Image (cartoon, rainbow, N blue to C red; front, top):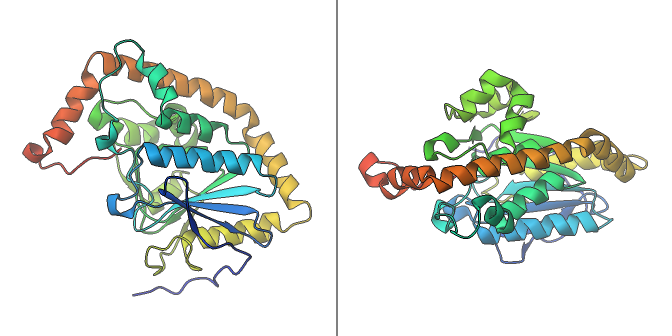
Length: 301
């Protein structure tokens, strides 16, 4: 049954279109089209992230960074999931190249370049988490300036299950967001938290009712559309709103970006070691390839 939702957002918009390799849909929102909405569009696989998705997201962020008419990006998903994380059947757990350290090769691959792109993105970056968010997609939220959750969403970072490491600077961002003990509930124990707990722990700033949108991220009642309304009405429509958004983002996150880059490199160096000694591959075999024995579903992080 559909829920009663706020007045739909009626600002200027462009027709949604598939971007690049066809894994991301985009449209412009806001009275001046100053908000770029990017929705991961792989609902049949719960918006799992493969190399094509990473490449499309990298290009979307690059386009937004270089376009002076874009003041903010809102990231969301099509269908019922925000993202089920990295697709483990897309080479995520391949053994390391014998001639190169894993750290180097990951940074050169789409997944690594996506990590760098999101950590260094200089404009307002928001996430409208309309459904479950898992793995690297969950840790990416900690790089966003605003995060809204649907009450149907949950947050899960199960890296310990596959003998990985905290990804995308989560070794630092979880600690600074919620404190050591709660961070380790998520990282060490792999705790899955619902939207209300995510709000209480500082992962998101707001939980909004789920509306019957048929999985359309651009529906007038979608979480992304309602987030765009907030951005447009309370920030970007203000006098000099675009400039204010940039100034505030630079002051709040400018010094942090360099530190996050170093954290990311440190995490990847440890991941390198875990790949080299075979821990990751062995865990992947037990949990993914041997999933039928343990009754474990196809895993995505």
